Length: 107
Image (cartoon, rainbow, N blue to C red; front, side, top):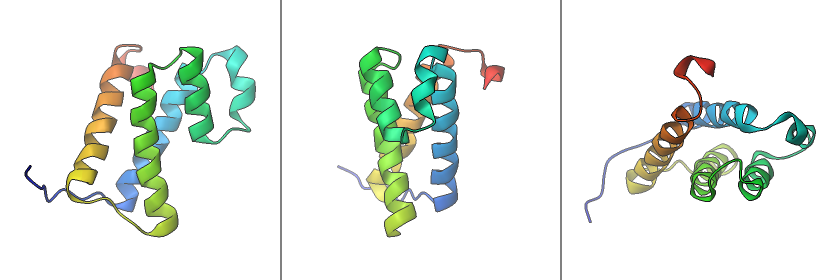
């Protein structure tokens, strides 16, 4: 398997996290949103996965993006190579799924 030279900066990871939070805000219904203010993003993703609001595999991809962002933020461990590419591809897949739900200008 070929190793890539792909790298992600803390800024890019923070932007991806922010984007995920906006996606969650859009997907969360009013009846579910009461929990959102007290939940961590990971707990929120899991709640929405099990409620059927987010496909299980999309929720898994969201957790991958958040996990790498948290490691970068709190441990200074930036993903590089194939791990960075995986995070980028996970975010692209999340965006692809989300684009089927709402028009591009909605979020």
